[in-house]
Structure formats: C-alpha cells, structure tokens
Length: 80
Length: 404
Image (cartoon, rainbow over all chains, first blue to last red):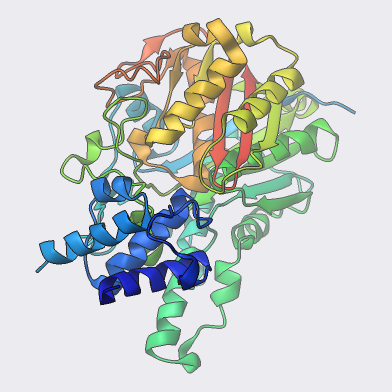
C-alpha cells in the first residue's frame, strides 16, 4: 500500500472510529458505519490533510474505499 | 380551561426589511434581500452570499453599553419584539408569558471569545462570555426590558425553534397559564467559523454570482440553501384579553402539531413530518380538504424540498395538488431559529391581505416536486385555514394551523 492510501485509511479510521486493519479496499463508507454526513466529514478531513479541493461530483462518486483513495490521488495530481 | 388564542401583533427583522410592512411588501413583490456577505471575507469559501441585514442599527433601541454587553442575536430579537408590541398597541401585563426560540443562541460571542483565548490567552477572556452567549440570554433581556414576570422558557430545536416558541406560547394561553404571550425566534447566523461549517456540509447554494436568484426551492435546478439572519416575534392574546381592550386581530391559532423523526440528525423524514402535520390538523379539528394555503419550510436543498413535498402528499392525498404553497427563504435566507416565526408572520399577513406570496426563482419544474408552489408571482386568494411548517435538524418538526 502506498503512502497516500495509508494516510487515507488512517483518516477514515479516525473519523469512523474503526480499526485500520478492518478497512478493506472493497468496503463502502456505509459498510464501515458511516452515513452521508460522515462522508462529508471525511471529505473535509481529506481536503484539510492533503491540502486539496474535492469537487461535488467526486464526492457523489465516492463509493468503495478504493474509489475514495483514487479520488484523493486524482485531486492531488490536479493541484500539482 | 381552553382559551381561544389570537395573534394581535407582528414584528420582523429580516434582510428584506424591518417591520411587518417593509417585509410584506418585498415578500409579495418577490424582492430578494440576498447579497454578497460583507461581515467577513468569503472569497476562499464555497459560498459568498447570505441574507445579511445591513440596514439594521441596534442603536435605535439600545444604548452603546447595552449593545456591547449583548450578542447580536439579542439585538435582532429586541428590535422584532419592539415592532410586535407597537403593532399590537398593547401594554404588556407583568403576567405575560415569554417564549423564545433560537437555534444557535449567542454563537458570535462564543466565536469571538474562542479567538481571544487562542490568540491572546486566558487572561483576555471576557467574564460576559456566558451571560452574552447562553441560549436564554435573549429571553432575559426581553423580560427585563418589558417587566415580563410570567411563564416562559427558551427553546432550541434548530430550524423549528421559532415556530415551537409560538406554539408553546399558544399552549400557555390555551391552558390558562397566561392571557398574553410574547413569542418568536431569533438567530444571528452569520458568524465566521460557523459559516465555514455550513460550507463544509456542502448544503449552501454555489450561485455566488447571482445572490438574489441563488435559492430556488422546488425548482429542478435548485442547488442548496442560503443562510440569513433575522428575528420574528408575535403578540398572542386570549379571547378575553382581545375583547377587554378591543384589540385588532390578524388571525386565530387553532392547531399545533409536534413530532420527532427518530431518524437521521440532518436528513428530513416523511414519516416524522407527516405525523406533525396530521397532529396539527387534528388539534384544529379540521379536515385536510379545508386547508387553503401552506407556508412551507422550503429550504432549496435537493432533499428537503422533495421530502416536504412527499410529506404533504402523504397527508393531503389528491387535495395536495389544489393547495397553493410558498417558501420565503429565497427572499431572506434560512434564518434557522427565526425561520418558523418569520414564516408564521408571512402566513398571518397572507390571511390578512388574501394574497398568496410567491416562491421566487422557480425556473424549472421537477417531477419529484409537482405541487403548486405559487411560482414567481403572488396570487389573490381568500384563506380560511393556513398551515405553517418548520422542520429542524435533529428531526424536530413543528406545524401551526391558523384560521382567518
């Protein structure tokens, strides 16, 4: 797992109060006990921690943890 | 004891005017007061617009010392209360009831003092932080100013606070605890760090280049709500009090329904809202088919407007399509704890003038919101029974029924 994926999972673990080891790439935010409001809390945490801006359409597309990591990476590249 | 309860005075402070006449004229004309925020820098934020009240001068009713020692939420409320008392031409008895609704209380004070603590240190934190910021500070200042010693309390049910306050004032008179009640809602919503939190929720409209056209309740292209600050207060009186002083009345409160969603903390819910509407109609002892107008909660978010539409259909069935409705939030913004009280004032004035105010900025029909929202233009109509809805975060639902 690369550093960005690790950091994303660390943020998810903290926000959703789950063990990092339990966060599989195929899990969804709701599988981990999150709802729409917690998804927004995650988005804010990613924006603050990675110093990026995540557009609304990407927020809507966040489904599995794998997709969340991809979206963070895409927006990191965009802001390069 | 079950007294009849009448509304005899209206006071409003909003982005479209101070006092009921200025407010009503802009409401009927559909003139929005939403503009670019001037209170703080917003260029780095998602939203730059709100219903700021820029022509508001607390010095008109408070002196400099009183202004310094009270939060803006209290300044707005005292001005609306002053308007309501003048409008009803009443001398309040010391046994008058007082009920205040506020979603955020003196949050600007809290914000300022947090900043002081983190930048200057603990020695600089004001001892007035708590008496200025606590939720019932506004209630205290109103009671002191007018010598009100009767029953009362402060209610905080987010966006339902103001309508709950009026509903509770209604109950206090109905049940014989008071002959008069002063009640309403107030919120000074435009505090910088809290505004950032609203932005983070991605719930605010991003039409920053078109402030007046930003909030579009029930329109397919709606993209969120706009915040506003404000206060709305009413004077309520028992039938006996009205007769004794030959007071003019706007209308009668005949029903009040309350419920919880018992669901998500921010997402609205059809079941909970429908329960509140049904309870209000049952309290009023009227059939759904007798309702002539609904002043909606109508925030302009994708979810709120669809859920409220579904709740109304759930209760009214086919009659839902025949009831004109409107939402005034595109005009003044979402004033949170004040919104239900200001909505009720608009409903009173709609009954008085036989005019349904418009829902402005309606540009595109949404198949999921297919009721009569009185798009863009006011309409003449006699109203015998009207409903006012207020649905708050936390799943608090309040509905009041008014009779001409």
